[in-house]
Image 1 (spheres, rainbow, N blue to C red):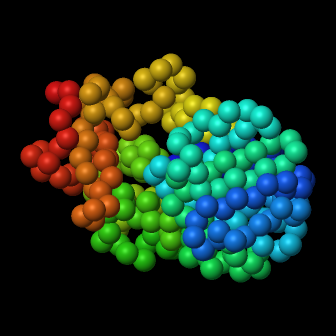
Image 2 (tube, rainbow, N blue to C red):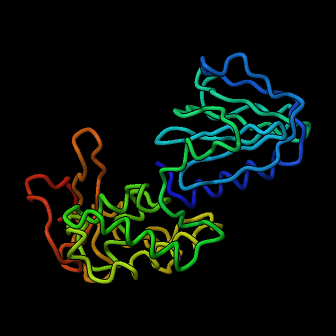
Length: 277
């Protein structure tokens, strides 16, 4: 599932392609929107909200989309061949004279009044990439996380109702930088405000980068501390990085950690995913 910085970049590309233009083509290929035609409307803005995208039109309506694991928005020049998947996977086409945006495999696509966007995103916690992010935003995120003190910090960080924008990559990286395993209880995490501040700064730093970096290094294979490194060793201490599933049954996410640099509980070695070491 895309992280908040990837969704921000998608919104920026869609905005550059569509905002200010009049729709010359609108094709929404989901049953409940099959008869909707927004041709002739002006695209006023494309806004990210956590992992959600809100495309607003001049008639007071908003197209809400969420990419989840497989979805993707692609931008094409008029006349350019579309690449992104077979035709039957296309869920949305929004075209102007300048560009065409094609949404592939979008699991969430709905149209709602712009004044009622809260129906789709009102449950979300503070958005880590909100331009208006401030101390009260951070305080609210901490308060929401602390509501469930016995919950694991890994699950709490992924819960978009606490703070919006963190995915599995940042979850693993933030836990490493905090020095705790993702299975540590929220109540046992030292300095939650610092963790939330670090989350905001990491996403902000990567918002406009083509490559996600948490280590400060740009060399291939050294941009992330632990995520995706189960066949390698920790860059800080040389211990083999471990990987295991975390989350409720059916919603597990592979999680990475260094058993030496990170303190706290971890699953039984019998459940670890195979890798180096």
